[in-house]
Length: 112
Image (cartoon, helix red, strand yellow):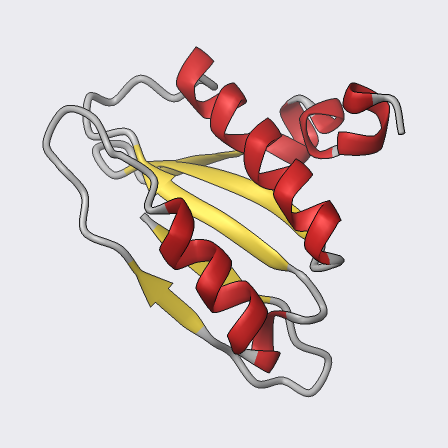
């Protein structure tokens, strides 16, 4: 799993987090720490991970993770821009913002 910073000055920041073969536990504390301490993330960020099983669709766990992190990001005022899921077997990817944009709209989901 990785998070990538969105920057307006052509700089790029990328952080990788260790994963597991079957399921990744999202290191939420580490992600939040990066978002609040690294100025590279102030313009927004992207969550990215791969589905090693070759199934390129948004899983229930992906939806829950996206919703939770989008909500936290909104509270921190650091926008979550997208969540990318990669299929390394076929060299393809899916963008949550394209496939299911409402998952990145915490104000709509949580009604505030």
